[in-house]
Length: 409
Image (cartoon, rainbow, N blue to C red):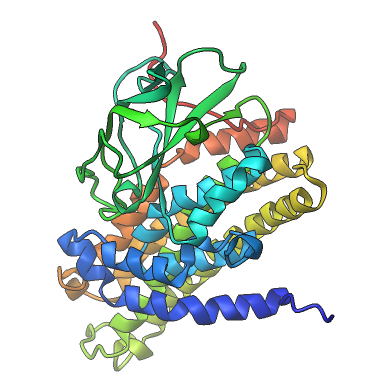
């Protein structure tokens, strides 16, 4: 029988045809939603109905079978439509990749089927306060024949949109050395409370607030752990999602700059064109914005290619090559150090295409800088630059795992 598996180009074309109308629909009202802080439940629903969450689920499990590269290309496009949404789905796609990279394959099928059926996964990892560096206040204890989960998380990105929540916890009883426990609980389980209290000035609709767990029952098949002592693709996956979102913002900046300039008639007496669209200085600014968007997109695609190559080796050989994991971690850091300032600069430079009218609230052009600045504050760039410098000078391997907290005096 002939092989009916689509080629890479054929699958890419099918995915674009499937999702671009959804992205266009999302983009129509994205500025208003951001301004009014209206959570994007409708938009997440449209993505769910189109099967977006199942992009990386193999066809055999009911998914779309997309590659890593195809996933990140689509995340860039979604980020252009509404930058809140790739971030809100970051933990969802992270869960899929964590299954592949760090969880025994015998446990994949039930969760992949849930995702293929439309389940969305959120996140509850980070805790606020000055707890000891690397320690978690959230606990998983055995009681009456089942596990019980207690604790509170913040920065629970995407959880208000989710059906299931991934929760890191300190686990009672013996745990392999240097392993991190996480559990997956229903967002509607008894004892789970999700609060819409994210108060940051950007990414207002990413649903990144507080999640509380009060004696939540957890079954054995909902408990996982992974090693924190070996190289992993996961840090690159999570950071590259932010960078794809930033690339999407850069493209939205170009779109909105062009939309602002084209119909504009008012000029300055000392300008260089009869209308702004003919002014070479305005054209120069828009050209610079276009170049920033191109560079950001190219950087994300370059890192995605390396991630994709590692994933193909995993599928073929059942392993993840350490050399490629080191490479992709360093490439992600290089992309972060270059993309972040470029997009932040573009979000400011945007206002040079017009006068004070570009500042009007109803245009909402400020959201691009606010959202980019918020994304740029994740995994601070200064530490990534230091890692690159240490590697270049001393050959030091990148660090794949870190934590936040207060160091003991």
